[in-house]
Image (cartoon, rainbow, N blue to C red; front, side):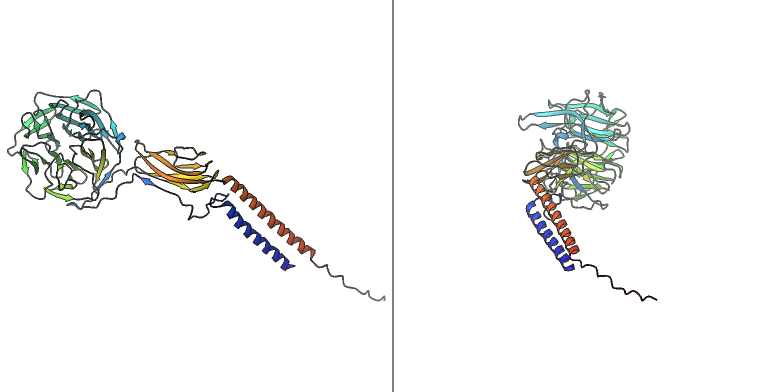
Length: 515
């Protein structure tokens, strides 16, 4: 009896194993009817990540043990100002953004030069065109400085589209340009150096290419709306294309380089207490014009990058502190940095040096880079990764696309392309999909951040035929398995009842004899 029950159970178990094997064979390589991948090892998804931040730059030690890192902010051309060189940039502390005005662009197709008078702001990895109707005329190489005493930006001179030198003076405040040109002003010209001198609460201008001399060495002060020529007892040699910035740590102006009457220059000068003074010869950056020169107010350092020709060190980043230059050759640097030409500022809000320039010299590829010292980090470039799980399904079986976006500025928008029939795009990071056709589908997601920057990522979905039939067949096999098991159990139960022996007869009882 017990042996028969065990034999029945063994038979049921054997049938179950056979049916399971058959079930797996009938379903094939696709997922089972219950939606479970056949194995974790074979159900992996494809993932492609694009527009990732560049490899970390090698750390370089400044005199104060500061690390440096350049990063391409990957702002597309469509979200940037048009290509240009010789634009003027400054940080507008009163309005809280970077300010870019003017510049020129040589069209390689028409061989004509375009001069701009557009006004752009930069804040939080986002460029915005805010050009007002009333603006200075188109020009390049104008001087631009923030006047901290009057809480406004001051613009002077430049070169216009007729190749005429200008000497008009404008101020920028709260989104408006105002012409304050006076009869007393520096000579008409461009490529002078101009910066705010906090020690004298005035804007300082030196040299440039002007009507008086191609290599000016005059010094001017602008204070409370008035230009005044200064006459220091010691003057740098005449030049144009040099750059100048105020070093708050040492309370002095710092000026470097330029083009003189006979050659490119790499001398460094400081201006303090009404006089110019040269920095003794030493480890100086190579001779050049148009370098990017800014003051990092967080670290208390002057930063120099780029310029031309500087054939030996133009990709180096230089720091200047306490009268000494230090050179830093980083693993990652902006490509071909020969044309900063004033299009560089220090962004105290995001704590990095901002470089906006044309990497080919004239156009059309504009790039925005950030140089981070140890005090801050640039915004990460927008990037995305797309995965699909399971990556191989049958027709009418569901799968899910998942997008992981980082960097840029949230919130993000999502748009999927290349989906199979039966699936519809939606602006969601997780997209459910039930394909109704078979095939191989490279699906691409385009991620857009809050500032309109975009990036893409791709994942591949494979859809096999016979999904519905396989699913139906699987359910029939499962139903058959259940019926067989139930029948076997019932059979064992019936056999057990039939083989049960009858109860023993009652024992005979002899009545006692009568009394």
